[in-house]
Image 1 (cartoon, rainbow, N blue to C red):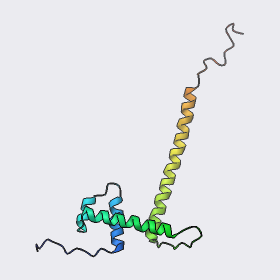
Image 2 (spheres, helix red, strand yellow; image 1 turned 90 degrees about the horizontal axis):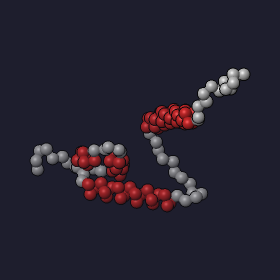
Image 3 (cartoon, one colour; image 1 turned 90 degrees about the vertical axis):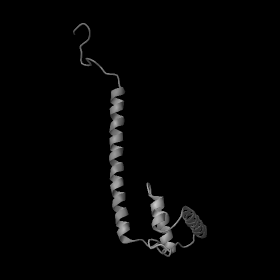
Image 4 (cartoon, rainbow, N blue to C red; image 1 turned 45 degrees about the vertical axis):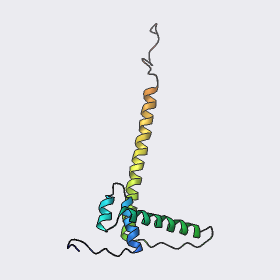
Length: 125
């Protein structure tokens, strides 16, 4: 066995899910993530299938009127997500205001211009 070969790490369900999430991020270096964990694309496909099956099974289990189990959330991650939400809401509000102003400007520019609206007429009275 070459000295550079690593012993594969034990993949817990949580670690598999974390790998799955990492590979789903936009622009994620999937091959690099898999190589880091000693996995192949087929392994990722099996993990993705298991995630989907688990999610569907859980969603089927919880019907109307059934008690839901709270999902534990990391407080630091929660605060980070809250801050990101606030930032995005502000950006969305700014875009909405800008959009409204642009629409008003377009409407004003589309109106026919009145030249000499205060004129006294052609005979000067």
